[in-house]
Image 1: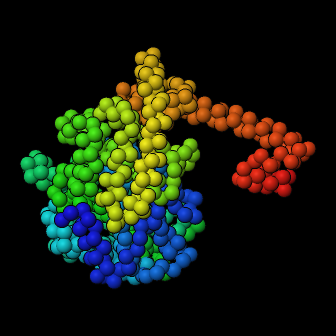
Image 2: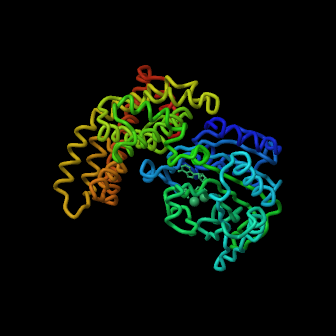
Image 3: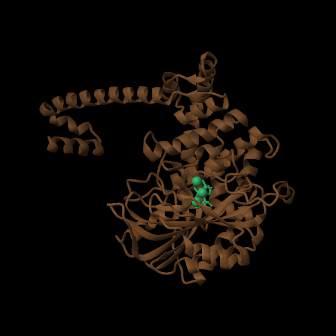
Length: 480
Ligand code: ATP
Ligand code: MG
Ligand code: MG
Ligand code: MG
């Protein structure tokens, strides 16, 4: 099965079970100030769970573009180092809004994985919430019973704690246990080495979580009590790239046809082969990963900039440029050349990229050019700083200088420091950054009063101003 077929099969499977197929929400959340980027399938349905809106169907399925580079879910440091955490990934999901529950969701998940995708049953195992006395949360006995019946024994059911197997929207609101499905993709030889022991996600790089089924069963009240929700919901999320890897029987997400077209192009541009050396492999993986995040964020309307989401794109892009520069000897813009490959790959899944590919490529190229102008000197500066640094801690002022003069985001300097076995003084950096912000605020406020003085006497001057400026000033005048 190709990646495209895997995705379509998922959607068809749930469509046959009366689910409505909906589009992915854009990566930039609308009207949700609590979230920088959409990082799960359920994010776009939050209002339905909170009772603030009515879903178009009680059963929904989709593939959601997700980004995990900030806040509670930040996988950036693992990307490229491991082979299954991405910045940008697709989360396949199915939802029940007060419709079916555990009795249906778990057997369907099993049916899809083992009968449709034909994943080997003996390599799958599941987790169930063990309960938590302190918070008065019960053991998820229903999921346990359903799994026991499906699997025919308790052998591959693992109990999980609150951290891994209990989901809460916040301190108050809907919550409930989750049940995950993991797959053991170790080779037979490796499996023999660890006799009989079932490894859990995190124990071994070839043992990975693929699907999470969350059961919104309770509501946590402000007084901390837990009450049963009047109607109960299912929210599931499966990592598409991980699923494709399992189905294609690969050792790494990057060996699947989700990533190989990008990797081949990076090989062609750099003349360096993938799979030869660990350092260059990491760089190639990072680049293949990051270009996806960059392209889809820009296609969803967020340009690189110096604040909020815009700065996140800029940081990711600069990270990719620097990996290329340092490890693949790519001294000219190259990332932009990957955009059209991606656009073609996703032409029918996320057509927004194909529709804007030239624009996205142009933005990426411009960003690359502007960073490359300071990168070489920045790297030199970093080397100097590194050589005179004592006790392996890079001074906050130096981190700030690299940021301010050479355009090095602090996480890039941090990454370079870690590569050299060092750390950065993040507090010192933040302090220097805040001081600069204060200084520029002061400048801005004095500028405003200067302008105000002129305006009072010489209102004719507005003739010289563009429309936007004129409007902004008009507002200020009225407001004052
Ligand atoms: P993990 O424990 O591997 O970090 P998670 O528990 O944080 O995953 P969930 O929040 O449960 O992940 O998300 C649902 C599914 O999305 C996961 O089971 C996994 O298949 C996939 N997923 C999560 N994070 C990533 C990522 N950074 N890259 C690719 N797939 C991911
Ligand atoms: Mg995670
Ligand atoms: Mg997990
Ligand atoms: Mg999980």
